[in-house]
Image 1 (cartoon, rainbow, N blue to C red):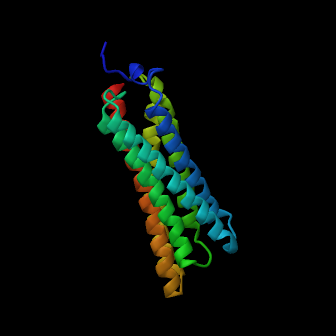
Image 2 (cartoon, rainbow, N blue to C red):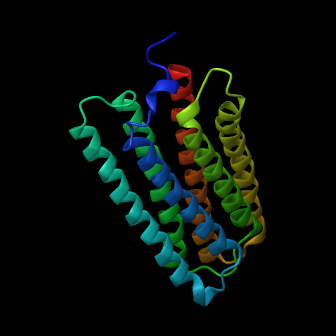
Image 3 (cartoon, one colour):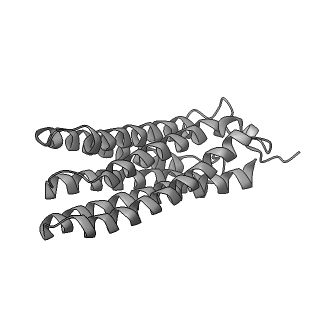
Length: 216
């Protein structure tokens, strides 16, 4: 039996890293939910308030990420490689940052109606964050036969591929249907930011896959 298995990694003694990673993931899920609300349900006059809420989640994520870094610097023996803890926290934080940037571009540009592709992109982003959350929750009891964990990071990849297709069609539809050149520029930039968000979530999935391969 390997000494360094995930089964013994997150023991009851680990009261730091797994809870903090879960907390950071919860922030990402909440930010993604608010982002979806912003594009799917929010009236124009409510956009500013939703964007403020997303910004607050981003600030919260920065604080949690800072706590993780501090614990890494102050802890001699970590539950698993500090590089992997740091990489996972970084990727989750980056995803939160891009979610916030997507929202802030809405606030900056204040476009008219959102095209269907933007709503679909936020649905995919939201689903991706939930898959990340499920995988992080499963780190405490990971094993080689853990099909559920593998399903999480595979689904993250599938969602990213779906996002690529939605983004490409969304751009084509935008250039074909949007007659206002200023609106076209605004919406194209917002779509690009949403596509970057999906990519960041996929990067988180890659780190989770690496952890599975190394420690399960």
